[in-house]
Length: 310
Image (cartoon, rainbow, N blue to C red; front, side, top):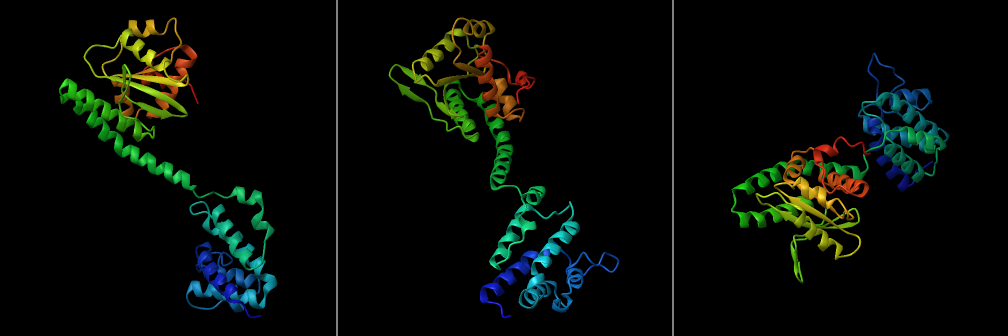
């Protein structure tokens, strides 16, 4: 039977695709059946296997079987997969995606092999990392390279004059938030008040207050940000970032007698994050949860490591 141009083209592509499934000829001391020539011999198709290079020999085997022994084409595919699974083993396993691609080739030749479409069989195969996993891996690698640079930039802020350092600190925080895809907005002014910026995180908008000063931040400054947040939309939250830290009295007083709509972050927290101790997004998530559950405006990032949240 003469093959159509589409069939000839598909056979050519399929030969390339099947090339890594098995060796053409087995090693003299290996199992001869675990090879293309072994399968051809076992199925009575050896006359279609040609001497010489492996790739043309695979194409000849496929073409001869399809055109002259069509009833053996599906058994040939099944044996290539079955023995390929043994040959490739665990070090270079045949994947789910490869079998799905093979099924597409077979379908183009007007065949469908139920064994190769079996959902249980497909689920049993390892899967190539999805594209989103590759993107996540690339982001992790970028983060790994970026954090040391940001840490160095934070430490260099100590060398600046106070006013210059304040502006530089706000700029640094914007870069840090955007590194974690939090869509940071630069400082903006409303009537009667200044907001140091805002971020979006997991569907919530957080207004940012940032201070770099020698004195510890007390309850007065916390109440100012609390008022700014309360005066906005009901879903707004606040993050107060004090490089120097907070007074214990201020934290305790703030946590009594009012709903907590803020979380507090210190310079030590930032340092810990930039050293890779905990991702920024995880820190915000856990601090927000503690604020909701216990009304605590501040807990150090080191303490968060010992809280058994999944």
